[in-house]
Amino acid sequence: MKRRLAFFAFLTAGALLAGCASSPTPADYAAEKPVLDLKTYFNGEIVAHGIFTDRGGKVSRRFTVQMTGTWNGNQGVLDERFTYSDGKTERRVWRLTDEGGGRWSGRADDVVGVAEGRSAGNALNWKYTLALPVDGKVYEVQFDDWMYLMDERVMLNKAQMSKFGIHLGEVTLSFYKTNPK
Image 1 (cartoon, one colour):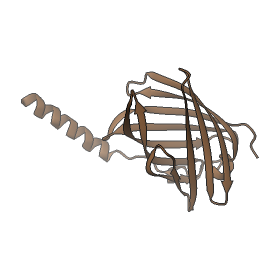
Image 2 (image 1 turned 30 degrees about the vertical axis):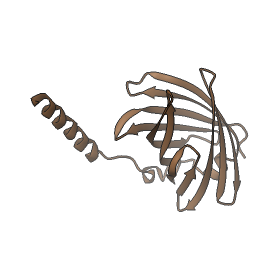
Image 3 (image 1 turned 90 degrees about the horizontal axis):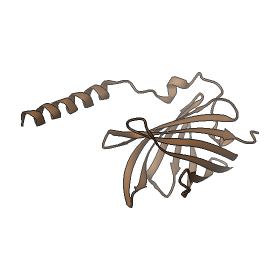
Image 4 (image 1 turned 30 degrees about the horizontal axis):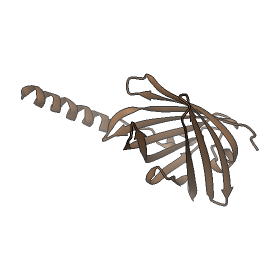
């Protein structure tokens, strides 16, 4: 019983300390160049290479994504086609909306509700819940997803995955725009 109470106290203290920690915001990157314009970067053909790492840092899955982005005014479609190192394939089609003032929204069939994004300078932060299939079950996993434009062709992406506030792992991607305009 004492061990359970001590363990509970340890978890509670850890959660409180984590809550006090300052998290970055897109405004922290407002002065960074080049400025990320999603309608320009995600227009045309893009390829990305990525990894999933578990909470211990071990790479558990590698993948490549072929993407095609198109825009009509403030509405965009980003068609992602994933190929995993084990040969499995997957497709996600994002429907993006520029809400103005650096605010973005996104929907996809496996996104629960609406993804909310904020951009400033060279950075974009997406927050969303993904219905993630694992071993025949589907888990709703929260993503805190950061993208950083490096130059007109390269963007880096790092996403933290969690469930019930518990860190599950990370996704890291490197995007490459084949024909910047």
